[in-house]
Length: 453
Image 1 (spheres, rainbow, N blue to C red):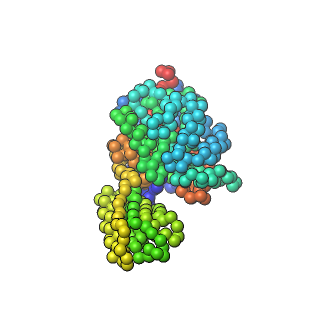
Image 2 (spheres, rainbow, N blue to C red; image 1 turned 60 degrees about the horizontal axis):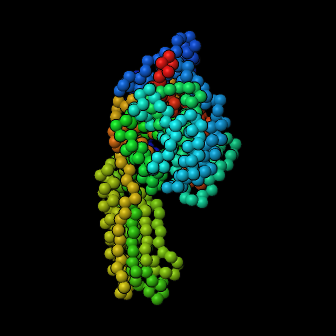
Image 3 (cartoon, rainbow, N blue to C red; image 1 turned 120 degrees about the horizontal axis):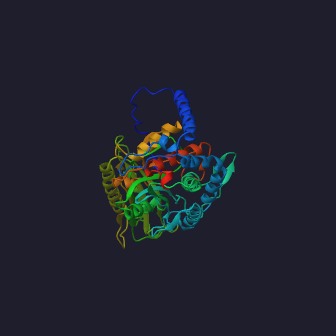
């Protein structure tokens, strides 16, 4: 997951009150709602077909929703332990099967009908009254860390520390917690909810898990809510487009002493890379590039026969991505040409290069009248939480690019050091994140009135 600078906040219709006033108002509102809860009949109209999302206030007065919200406070220690247990199961890119098996077991224990699809996604179904209308709640299984990384979880005071503990241990724990809370509350949605632990979000996974989910649910998928990382201060409504490329330069190779002067693939790659890193990027629309990996050679005293470079390009504008890819091609071609010109002895073979596309994440934006965003805003207002709109690169890229209502949010608590061996998670504030996610989910799925269950 990657998020970039905050975008616009929700437009205010009137001058906003001071934070202390908002919190006090929210607290009074919640107190009144719980009084109403026990004073009125438990009836709520079902979510009309194609209608806007149900408000958090109208949901919170229902006893089953109240019970689901209340479940979190009683089970925070268990949720923390589940997060640590799941994080300690390795899930390198393209090797998520062991963690997927653990997620299948824990989602089955939450009363869901669970299967693993051909892509490797774990899918738990909570069938709704309108079975063919789907709402997808997802958290990605994979981490950026290679096989052999020590992912055992350490505890330091309130913090949990381990590679992947926040991204996306926090999301997986929230996925499980939401499923368990609905099961404990005997709550049935209007639309069928799919609880999904998906593969392929990180690195070169190219969002393959979410691509498969969207393809398999064509025409039925009404909303996608992605749980990625920690926090409650943001909501991603715009997809950041990206392109991952690999440059490969090959040559005859040889001995460092006896064949000195032959063209060297690593030299060519370095010459081209130096040219490329001088390429100017646009500050608006924001654009970035990163030379993330470089490989080549077999020994220090051998002229390599191959060298590889992996490059990540991201931008708010598809045109800027194309421009940088063209620049990369031109720079590598120039680097190969310069290395050939610098050679001092005839080569028994050619120095050649090619560019491979490792992955391409599409861009997209949610529509202004998004029922899913409206549900999130309603949950924030009810809980006294403030969040900003962001553009980011997450699993939500795929549904957003297809015109499907989708957002990505944090799962509560706080985290830091993502994609590093020093990654950490602090569960303080987790309950707020879980309630926020649940009310948003139910806002678009709807809840079957108790008398009709």
